[in-house]
Image (cartoon, rainbow, N blue to C red; front, top):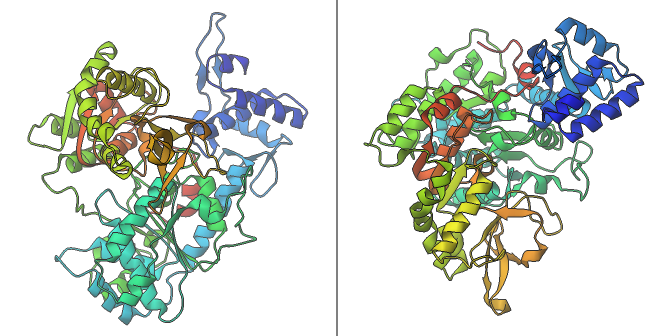
Amino acid sequence: MDRLYERGALCQLDIHFVRFLTGLAGRDDAELTLAAALVSSYTGCGHVCLDLACVEGMELLPKDQDGDRVVSPGLSVWTKKLRSSPVVGTCGEYRPLILDDSARLYLYRYWDYQEKLANLIRCRVTCGSKCVDLDLLKEGLTRLFPCRTEKIDWQKVAAFTALTRNFSVISGGPGTGKTTTVAGILALLLEQAGPKRLRIVLVAPTGKAAARLQEAIKHAKEHIDCTEAIKKAIPEEASTIHRLLGTVHGSPYFRHDYKNPLLVDVVVVDEASMVDLALMSKLVQALPVNACIILFGDKDQLASVEAGAVLGDICDTGNMHGLSVGFCRDLKKVAGYEMDQHLKREDETGIHDCLVQLQKSYRFGSDSGIGAVSRAVNKGDSDRAVTLLADNRYQDISWKDLPRADFLCRSIRDTVTGAFRNYLSATDIPEAFELFDRFRILCALRKGPFGAVALNSLVEQVLRQEKLIVPDKRWYAGRPVMIARNDYDLRLFNGDIGLILPDSATGYELRAFFTAQDGHLRKFHPLRLPEHETVYAMTVHKSQGSEFESLLLLLPDRDSPVLTRELIYTGITRARKSVEIWGVESVLRTALSRRIERMSGLRDALWAGGRD
């Protein structure tokens, strides 16, 4: 273990966990020690479990000066040793580690999160379709989703799915009409409820995403064809999942759980790809058994920062799905669509009937380079992506060979001054926020010469040289900051972005301004802020849930395990109008050949025997 720690393969937390567990076991077996260290490390890297079959016989460290190397045991020997340990249990037992029948090793709490979430989803799926007035639904679908083409309108299919299932997932890329679909679904649900009051909540994983959802719903409901009473009943307020569940200071638990469920009928979760296993499990556990759950998101985006790839596992990303005969029959009754080519042979209801992929982009048309490149990236087609990026006919996306690190400051000067000059000159605070959010530098990595930390320093250096910010001051007018640690007392959370600006109410002293979800400004003395960092540049991971008019996507000069097609896709699709990518072609090609693969048992728990 010491050698693995010294070589950076393990962190201090992993070592402490191993010592705790071996002490609890009363013996120091090499197989248990290694398994405990790896499951701790892999969970810290975003995996839900350690799939022993994937790491058996793996060389964890190459030969050192003494000729020794660290290699994991064979699967049969390893599992036999672990099953004999008093700290390793089977599914359903209460032990620190759980080893399932597929040789997946979990920390108990992650096995528990997964088991409870899978069971609750399966219960909603197997109950089949809800009892709805099909005639009323047919009229509503025709009115709210009028036929514009002979082709299948997948927004209409999504609405039908959400109305007839207690659990549904609607996935789609940027500009595919997810918010319009949400507004239509809520109107249809309210029409079905009639005089009965329907308790609907809108949530997202971050404050920024919740604010965007709130604004989008408010705009979308103005344009839907329904009565004023229905429009008025569609909620506009959205909150974070944490706020909905009720955080308890200093505790991982929430006020609402299976013992104290939320009083809701419908929960709409936006940006579902950002929700990790633990949070999704806690949310679903806190809902009444008959509550309707609707997940919206983009299954092709990056997975959550914390453990799990919940949306990807639920959607069984990478596999094709059919639909049951019963689903297709009912859909034909209300929408007139003939879905024979999508039929699943068995006439059974399964999770495949709960998933819809929105396919038409209303933002990126046939002349959009962003749309074309993002589709190539999604398919892992590096040849087409490189060709498209080199094609000068696209005005909204471009490629530039990455400059050397020592020339980077000079190379970004024009981009930085052009992007931030107006923002730094703004005198009105709301205007400053609006101008700042037009452009961002996104980095694939946090550290290194092309990482977000280095880029923020370079941007500040350029802005000082251009006399756009005050030299050598930590706090200066215009400094953008991003919260890096939750502060429940101040209600500032990881990922919240604020601006340091003069406050006319205090004689123009500097204050940190943040935009609340209701649009109002909140201000704090800079010294009161929790841990934070400058944010002219940010990682692609941190940009999830945000959109910018234009951006610069900066790839590193060499390959890294975090470079995947999901990261490139997420970065590109944060832009509404234009993207410039700086990188090395070989690094881009390698990234597009790599997918995020997080070890988990959720996919198998939901899809066992249910694929085409």
